[in-house]
Image (cartoon, rainbow, N blue to C red; front, side):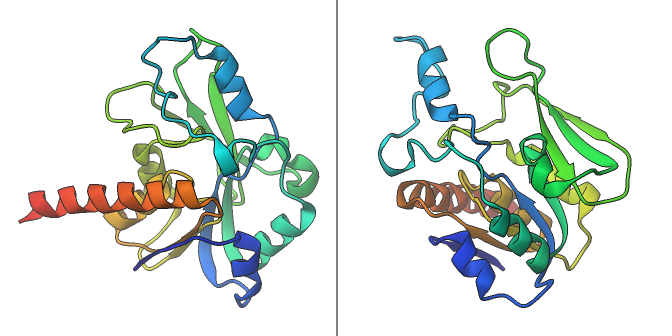
Length: 215
């Protein structure tokens, strides 16, 4: 079952018993002001994939990182964690043997060449390679959107059949789409109503198209 919630993830997690989820795959704010950075680097009149970025309530969501109580709750309600932007949260997360790397195959613009995820598993560092402007990425509806293929790779390598998956910052819904394809039970929280509505629409469209091909 896939459940998408328009609510504060902290409020949701406080309702949960310990270890309610087998795996949390989350992408909280990095505190780097990504929306303003994109505005400065996107040239007027170009066909940038960031042109869809909205203003309004979600415009400044990335001004600061989550507080300590977020990470405490996340570790309480999940058995294992994959936390994107983990390099920004080391004061809360501590050392780990395993970092996961999304190599964006970039190097040609001001965007980062890679993103790092802190991982609770005791395994080696692993890398997923996909250019962040490549074919198959999908329409960009969120400034921090990650490809569905990345989440499929994460679930294939770090989740097992029957696992319950939590995403506290649903964003564009890529994680939910990947969980649907993988047959996982999944809950995703998104506080911003505009992003939530866009993610729900994207999820519905993606899964409807998949159902058509399965007939």
